[in-house]
Length: 116
Image 1 (cartoon, rainbow, N blue to C red):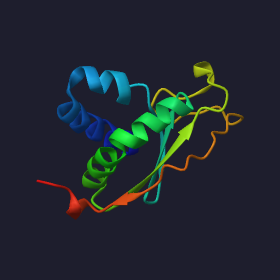
Image 2 (tube, one colour; image 1 turned 90 degrees about the vertical axis):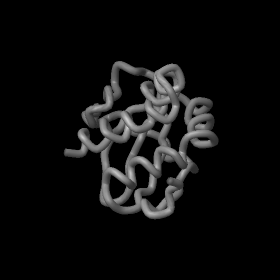
Image 3 (tube, rainbow, N blue to C red; image 1 turned 120 degrees about the horizontal axis):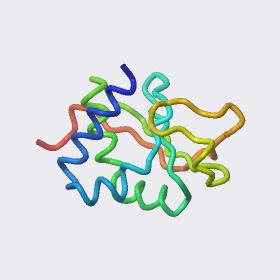
């Protein structure tokens, strides 16, 4: 179910951003898990995390909140060592020894506050 939520949200982001923007900035993100109302999403590096936070965090919150049916907080993390071989491919599976840095990029957006 959790992966289905991310896939539906990703499809909405693709519609909003277009294929190139989606493939450039959303596809490299790894959806790690949804803990309660917090979605944990991993970026490949700090630059990437900061770029996504500054430009797409609100969109990600809106579409995930819509899919979940309540406001969702997003915790953007950074791959600790930049090694893709240890991280998930978006399916939520991780190496238990790979602990991401917590990002400062957090926020909430109510599903009812999204623009129509």
